Length: 320
Length: 309
Image (tube, rainbow over all chains, first blue to last red; front, side, top):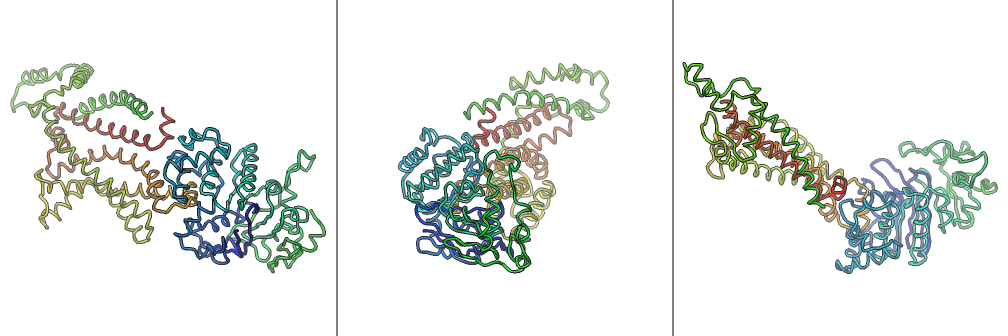
């Protein structure tokens, strides 16, 4: 359905994203994971064609959707896809709705715009969708303002907006990061059900490996603006071959463990201005050698997955 | 909801107006000189003077004078002008329409032109336009009205002869005063509009509006503009008072009748009742402006409506 190939993004002379590839089909959930600053959100914005808003541009690669390359699509045609066939769910529900407008009209807009419904029809559809998202009393909610609702409720409204025109692809950029833990689980389950019920293709961007393990079919691990490993979720979790993926999995908290408590990865994510040469992860990598600082690693394929590490074969033998 | 909010704001004006009335009343007495000197003929005796002072009630204590004054105000009784020897109410009624016309037009001019300029400069984002706007805003907020008035008179009235130098004849006599008073307002409103629009553009929800597939034009007029209007309305409301204050000198320079000219003349003659009435009018206008601004904001922003009611 959606296939991104070798995507590169630049802001002026800076190149925060390069060589990102993935694809996702109907009824499938793809997880994009990585720490903050790894380029996950940029990837989402590129697919939505919204990079120019923040002054960025796509410098290479393609974003193929339904047989057409979106990077070459004129703005007018792109607008029909946005909200119509590709829905976006953003990170912070507290700030993602217009505070001056009631909920109803904000959701109605989508069906009016993409399905050509009139006011009453769009409202009926809005209430219908809010109902399926387990929002109580949709007609009352439509008359509320965003500040009168909780974060979890607002995120459901955002999901309702993304779904209003029955899209094929849903891109969820950290949909639960700003929510309470209990609400997080509800939202993730909701998204999971939607994929199955509506045969959606879901791109789930998150830094939460446990969410990925629960919901995703495939996964792309990103680091410093690059994809470092990708493949089916079981393979990646069973046999992570990139040291960064191994470290991420090692960081998943596993119950109330004795002394280990929470583990982290030493060092910090490089900013776009000081991406290291060679393998971007080498300064923090426990198994880095001289070659890692000079030569960028190629993808080493094993089964359905691939890892960009000089020692992918060796790492494979020693799962974390 | 909005009615209740308005009522609450009105109630809050009561203590404010009381304090203002005290200040206005007192400030006049702090001025050196008094109106009786303007009435006495050269060589008048001390008795003549005492008699005049008593006639206008100036011999009573300040507190008594204040309550007499404020009591009369409540009955719509503005008193008698001491030097001009006419009812103050007549003077106000005669001059107020001129001020309202001038102020209203200047307000209209600065809000419409200012908002248009601000919007264009927020959207176009061209470096040359940016620099021009910054220069214009700096000029607009620093050039004093009376000086600008003189320049405009020199250019358009004296040299080009397009508009009359002074007076209050037809619409032609309004053009230059309106330009003078509105100029600073245009610059201010343009700046606020521009900044507010740019701020609104950076809000998170704008990304989602684009993601819904809305066009940039729709987003600008249906979503960004209402947000930008909030600070603009505040500024405009405060501007009402500023415009009237600015009108004081500008009316004088252009030789137009109006509250401002009346005030300046009365000040020169220490004509207390007139000065007090004029100041009270200006203060009322500022308070009304603020009230209108608050209510307008509350009617646009549901968050304000709820917080304060």
